[in-house]
Each structure stands twice: as structure tokens, then as C-alpha cells.
Length: 95
Length: 490
Image 1 (cartoon, rainbow over the protein chains, first blue to last red):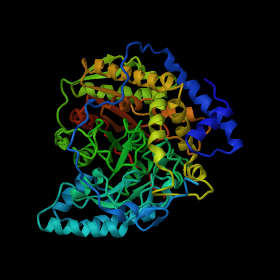
Image 2: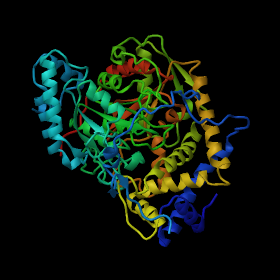
Image 3: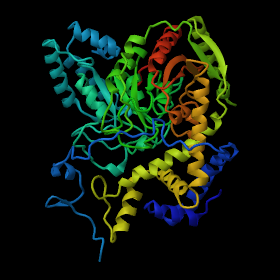
């Protein structure tokens, strides 16, 4: 399926990546090329096939619902672009 | 000192135990080799002081008779592994100057066993690439060159720094990760041995995530035995990774050199692709002959869905990547580009921080997961993935392992496959099926092409049967007698 510039813009918005206007058309062509190549999957008969989400056994290990780790704010904040008083500082979300 | 860098990992362990040289001398020799090889751009962080401190501690443990299995062995670490206090960026601008406050499980196993860290190795950004050209720190150059040419060649990717560093004797072994072929294809391009173990053998905890259902860590090394020694240390159950397998780790090195007599080896007919160079066909035929000679029975098998593996991969991997990479939002670590609104900050940070290939894959992943397309693309790909895994299950009812080429060509020139993303993706045509099915795969150098460039053969095994692969690879290594090394130009 071919993708147009408007679709690229929509997807880029969903992915929270700013793409300049002059990149939309070239990206539409690149992505359309990749998707056209992917289309061949339509040839495979997958009726009744269970989708494969993991190659290991589907049953995930269980553990007690208790705190096993934590209590080191300094380490958590060590790489933050901005911090204050033991918190992350982020741009204002609600006006 | 050049003699010390020429050792195999096993040779170095033996030399250290015999006190022929110290771990500090061994580390120093490699530190100097790295300094002299900056033209390769294999290392993005060099940690010489760290290495010498670790080496002195190794010497003390050796003197006290407390040497671990990798005591004093200098290694390079792919920049995808979090290393405590040492910059880890997945070779992306978006991680900025990120210094983890914790150590990945795999690297912590290596240090537990006495290994010494030389530094962090270059790679494709977030492991997305087959030529190392998507790295934010620039491409790695392959130490190998075509005969009579000084054209710069790719070491492959994404573990290109790892492969280049091992081939150029800058370290005795390196960690890599493999999502679609990122250990095996670079190993093939550089005349080294690369192993992607069964999914779940190595913990993914502390490894920067790309596509979580496909990512696996593994070693790149000079010999099959060296790879087996490294893998044994890297593996092991980890409760911090819910997909980590709670199974015993076999003594892999013990299987190298064991007889392969009576093993049945499958040769998948679908791997004879159009346009494959005659030299690779010949190498494959040589590999078949060597294993026959060693007493194996060769069986032609069919993996009918092989051609659909790459297209399925390019839905599954970008979909998982778009989800995994959503965490890079400029809030808690890494790059932040300030802006008027929160959305501006997100969008500008991600536009500035991610490179072209990473953006392309996030967009594809977001598209195939978006409302209205999920069933047509993502669900379809997961069903095709099941078909591909079923092909292997059927084949392994008749054979013990499979033998194929590792890559459809030898190393190509930097810049050569840049124009068409799909042409670049085709590099992984023989390796990607193994990731989709979660199987172990191993690449072993088996010969040179007419230009004098290394070519690799791939062995694929049953789930958790790396041991058989090591025995077979040992037999191929012995028969191939691959001794060629890159001629030093750097």
C-alpha cells in the first residue's frame, strides 16, 4: 500500500517525531518502497495459524508482589536533564 | 608486545595461568593497539585506566590462586550494554552522555569471571543497520581490504565495532547483540567467529532494547573455542529478564573438538538465492564436503517460508522498536531539546536525537501498529513468523543442524548500499530466520573470495543445542584451516 505525505505527517505525529515539510514526500516514497516489498506476505496462507508473540514458553514466571529494589533517588536522577529537590523537572503540562 | 595481542583468548588464559606474562601486560598491549588503530573507529569510549585497574586486580587473584574462568582477559563491549559509570549511548545522539548507574547482567557475568574491560565498541544506532553506517559516531572501517585496493569496506553491522576490533587484534573477544544477524554477518565480513545463542540464554537486562522478542547477546571471537569460553560466562538465568531461561549452562568449550560422526546436517534448498556469488556457492559446497569427510550425513531439507522472513522481520522488529524507543522523550535521561509546549519538547528532542534509519523504522513500526493496519501487517507478520518457526521444527525432525552461508556477499564498500533501504536489509537474508524462530546460530570463517576477503558459513541448531553447533564449528574450523588475517594498514 502506498503511503502519501499526509499519512507520513500523521504517523510522525503519532510517533512524536517532528519531520520538516520537505522531508514528508521523500519519506513517503521510502516507506512506500519498504511497504511494497512487505506486501509479499499476502502470498502466505495463514488461515488458522496462531500468531507467534514469543519464542519462549508463553507462561511468564510469577513472583511475590513485594518490593525487591529501589530507594536510590540519586541514581535514578543521575542522568536527568533537569532536577530539583529530588524530582525530575519537566515542561509545564497543564496551563 | 604485539605477540600478546596475537594470542587467542584461550592462549592468553593459559599464558596467564603459567605466569608467562601478567594481566597488566596483556591489558597494556591491547591499550596500545587500540591507540594505534583509531583509524578503524572501532571504539567509541576507551577505558585504559579502568582496564589497568581491573588487570591489576586479576593479577592479584591469579597470584592468590583465585583466578576466574576469564581472569585477566581484555574484552571490548558493544555500546548497547549498560556499563556502570561508563558512557553508554547505543551510538545514538538521543542518549547524550548517559552513564548508567548499573551494570548489564551479561557484562556483570564477564567481570564476575575476571574479564577486563578495554572500552565500548561502535555499532549501528540502536543496532539498526547492517554496515555500521548509522552510528552517531561515524562508521567503523573493516581492517580487511580487497587485494591491491585501499577502498574502505564495512565490517558489517550492527556489531561492526566488535567484529572490527576482534579482527584487528584490539581485544581478545567482544560482546555483540543479534536481532536479525548483527553478530553473525559482521563476523562473516571480518573473518571472526560469532554466536547468537538460543533466545533466552543470555539475559537482556541492561542491554538497550531494540526488538525485545528477537534481541540476543553473544560473543565475537577469534576461534570457536574462544567463543565457547565467552558464551559460557555470558549465559545464565536472570530473574530480572522474564524471558531468561531457567536452564543449566552447558560446559560449551568441552564440545569443541568432539566428534561429529553420524550427525545429520540439513542443507536448505531455499537458501540458494538468485544472484548469489559463485564463490559463496563454492564455499557452501566446501563446507558440505568438510562435514561429510568428518562423518556427517548431508540431507537436503526445505524451509518453504524462507523468502518471507525478511518482510515479516521488517514488520515485527520496527513495531517492537517503535514501542521500545518511545521511552526517549527527553524527560528522565539523555538529550532534551527545550520548546514551548511539552509536545514541542518531545517532537524536537526525538527529531534531533534519532538518526535517519532509526526514524524510518519508528515510522514503519508506528504505521503497522496504528488503528486499521494492525491486523493486516502486525498480526499477519506474527502468523508468518509462526510458519517460519514451524519450518525449522519440521526440518529438525530429520536433521541435527543446518549449514548455510552467513551472508549473500563479502564485505562491501562504505556508502555502497545507502541509496536503497531494502537492498541493505537483504544482507540479513540468511540470518534473520534464526532470530524469528529463536534458534542458536553461529558464523565461522571458512575461506576468502577472489579479492582476498573473508567469507563465513552459518550453522543453525535446535533450541538450546549450542553444544552441537560448537562441535560442528570445531570440525569446520579444523577442515577450513582459516589462518588469514587482515594485513595491517592502520
